Image 1 (cartoon, helix red, strand yellow):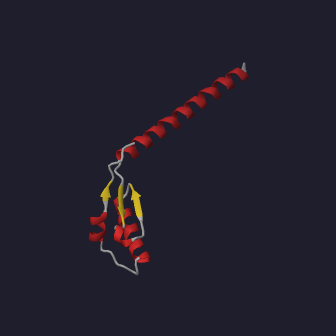
Image 2 (spheres, rainbow, N blue to C red):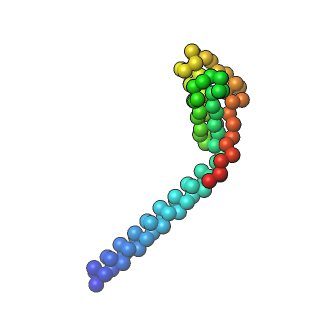
Image 3 (spheres, helix red, strand yellow):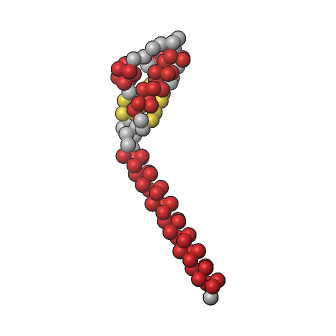
Length: 93
């Protein structure tokens, strides 16, 4: 009797755990799908092919400024210039 009760409780616990994981995964996917993707690239004339993408616009700007400084002879890119290079992706899942 105890073994049956323990088995039923274990199965119930496993079911609750599996359902919770499935719901959490679906929630994360739907939130990511509703968040825009920002991206920026170096102009083709720069010849480096650098591209950065993120759901965080500030992160794209920071990465773009860092790339300009380290890969383009210490170029200092202003926040306004970097922000002007940022675009919003039209990708859909």
